[in-house]
Image (cartoon, rainbow, N blue to C red; front, side, top):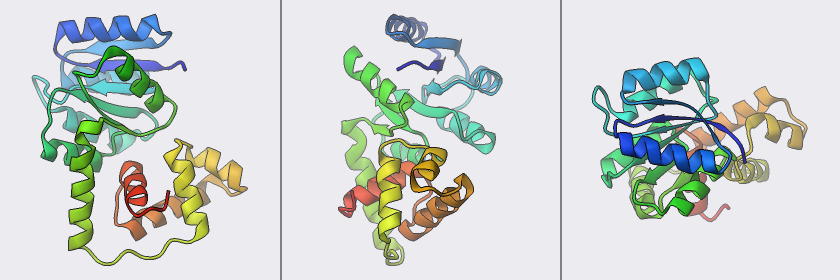
Length: 210
């Protein structure tokens, strides 16, 4: 798996360690930044395949960086790499639409595997924080209206989404246009009461659809 990656972290040792790990395994570190503002500029100009972003930055939070990127860029995959184990941070990240929530104490081999999975189109949550995410989804369901029933095509789309397929790839597989798939995906979000792919896939797993 290859990919162009931007690292946004204000700790020099973290930058050095990530750079060494990623380049050793054939990944291209296209740029590194120590502040949120620098990170935004790099991501916007380089348009990497993945941005690894720390939550705690000197000038803004990593969540704010992700929110700003998502306003104009849906293609770059975003993953937070943090030491924080705060449920509110986990919830905020999921709402923002990140594809990964990774903890800095992961062994190097597991961290690399997680990054490769994110580059391959999968959503990755550190097992330690998955419970927070599931509890949040349960609370949302309890406070919201009953979910609408999904048909077999919706479940098939969810299955492909869980495997990391893009809307374009799903469209080719199902012989539908990319715009049609985008509309169907948005309708699935509405029916499940979620806002993005990570939430949709987790909700589908929780209800035994996948």
